Image (tube, rainbow, N blue to C red):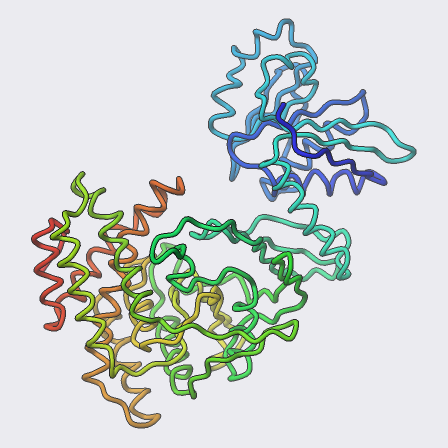
Length: 503
């Protein structure tokens, strides 16, 4: 095996052994093999059972020993095949058990790996368990990518222990379209459920423009300071954002308030009008405040909220050129098409010179809005996932929710949301509706050009095909934005290039 540095852990008792098995479920991914070795009673089955129940988030999950069946399969968030090779007659029988296929689709847990060690993958992670007093010693070896993930999981456990959450129950909550962040729910001894943001420092991306990587050109947040700064600001002006309970800024770990479990979609995934309308009220409230660009974060840090500048806008719009167009028609954009497209966006961005600007949350749509029925007014709307906030045209955030990328917003509701926002802004002071409508159309087009490329990039570069289901909706939204007269050059370009545009 090509090993990273070995880890040696001491598990004091059965409870720690179970907790360790649960934490392992946060570290492993499809294609990983975990080899559990040790004498009878050393804890192999205990760890395997805890791993499976944590992955299922079901403490009652039946986990029978595969001693006689040799393999037991589980269709969980990540499929798992639990092998016990103690009764394996010959290593070659491993193929007959479907090991390779199981590994290609999920995780393989292997007890008694010694019985077929020569046929197990070189990339396996080996856990050797030994009795040590009333507890166990675990020696872990494996390839560096898997060991890095495991060390991260253990570092988060140490963070929780350090801040008074020893023994807290951890469960996977979600990842996001970013390849950087992950989230867990943390169950406390008092019965509360908190949220942990896991945001390790990302590796440097390759340069894409003027020697800068994409995150720097597009002003994407690369550490937890922006999240803390924006969360504190939103709370200060009366909006509902998560309180920051504990932070490790160097490691990129935040323990934050859980705003709730309920969203703004119904059981069928359709928008609930009342909740969308109240969310738009929050936007109007936010945009009526004085624009601030220097916001204090923790650890005596001041976060400068970046401008959504022409370079960033154009870089995002380029995703349609670089990813969507080649995927759609099988050939990349020609030099002429590229030059025309970028020149059109130069002109559209100049049209925004006089647009109203303020703090943009950037992804203000259903996945990032929590409905808090027990609260009142604007505090019924909980806001999350705002670390990439910028200063730019306020119309952008309204476009984000009126054209929600994750669900179809019916035309009448979309029209009502526009009316609600404009009516509120008029009531709060001078408001140039005509200029705002033009900015809305440009920002809606820019956002959907970005998304049309992003869905393909997530598929082809990041191996996340699930986002492609949003493509038809994104193109419909783009068609709606292109109806504004200011966007006629982009509408004509899309037709010539073969981008699917409807009337």
